[in-house]
Length: 291
Image 1 (cartoon, rainbow, N blue to C red):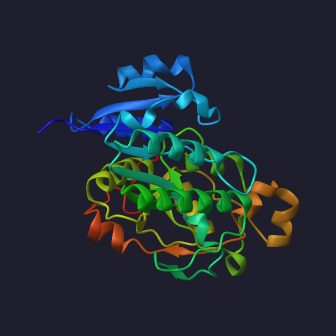
Image 2: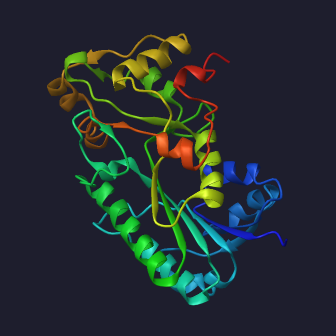
């Protein structure tokens, strides 16, 4: 059997982790808008393609190059929809070669669930523009899948962490002394280690069913403050100070504060059963923060 071609769109940290795990199972292409990134992508075994989702004319015949697409590119930082995904869908539809696509979305599309356990059957209720852009991307991609006969799968992903992830090392938050909420006002959040997410992406490319939604998260169920207390203990750092929500509003940026406004606990049984993914980091306690 010929080796299929995979196009990775948005080849940042997770895309690079995916490339390291392909082991000849795919011929990888990586879309990048940065000429300076081409050498690094080649070193990871990918053929770099110059193109910019914000400039649709640069996408050319993208849809005729790959059998599958892993869409990791985020929406723009403003607006209620995702024009980047719209440009990608139009380019892919012109080629007609793509048979499957996996999109990395966010669990933020569920909105605030009051700390409830959240399965994929729960209706979405995005409450922020950031989440609404992701919901728009999901809708565009599922419509594209139905229209063009493409197997589209959506991964709904919470906070991504790893000690070697730029901007995703939870120790940095602890070292900054960023406060957590007092227990009575705390929220529940879910997490996923970056390496487990990369493995989930590869599993989804092979196994996800058409139009399927899958939560990708670990087994951790701690409230946010307890989660960062555990990180601090594992890293031998002082635990974060605890503050009330009113005090947090005076100390944190609007973006940081927005993450304290929603509470949910993702259910990951579908991920384990359908993607057959065995987590290497089932909770943050499995991660080495003391080295």
